[in-house]
Length: 404
Image (tube, rainbow, N blue to C red):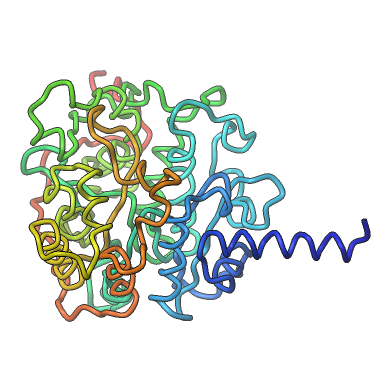
């Protein structure tokens, strides 16, 4: 077969692939190419197996970011596929990662998420911009989600995101949406802590929550675990804590006063990080449906021209609240209550392949509004009390040193 014929077949296959997924060929093709970093207005995201292995509903999320944000923001979709032109190695040096990442030998049940944990902070520290997980329906323009405050010289804001209540009346920042300029001191220290957990022979996060750097961190709970009373539906604590080791590293830094360089994590968290409540801004759909992916899927699939029954009313009310009062819808994976089916799992199934954008449904209405509607409300930062119980110790000083 000559080169011309081979290229024609490859092109035809690509066209059929895009048509099958109902994706606009231009944006989807553009997202699969490497783009130079021209400014700090970057959106960073990651799918370890590459764009074509990403579920169609997640691809549509990313495509809609491009539509929503316009040409001033550049969306970068990175991966760790060998020889891929969008491989992380083209943006971040290997010294930022453990051996298992660089050698491609990470294992365990959460390889993709933990590779994402290793990737997100170096990208923000080197280049600035926003990290968003691919499961994000974006409703609000990024300029209005902390970016304008971050670049304002008169504003104390240096880092923005969303906060979730991981213990009663105790909020911490999620890592699925982060926004800052390059060179952020908190971001670099956070990554340094996480990287230090990965020894030369470490290939997964098993036991990370017991590491000497993290063993003093109090246990955290998911919002669903606090409200669902069935003990069989509670996520295994050890599994959840290891999965969320990246959050535990954040908590270590937040509670640290480093005598070596004077960095006060508690002071920084209280005064320089702007946060909005995640359960309102990202996860409003969850308590509305008692964390049931089945009910969420039914709401998305409800037809706009259907009977105005209870389900229609609920879907309609939710859609308009999302347009006006939510920054995004976060469709999450990860460890979960064993009796609950999450929405991402359903949308991964072939029979629900179009449930996130079906014509004439509330899903299509939400997709349309996420691109074309702009919010007028101000995003007001939460007021969180400064944690006075800080540890005076070096960034990577093991806990055992405290008692010497």
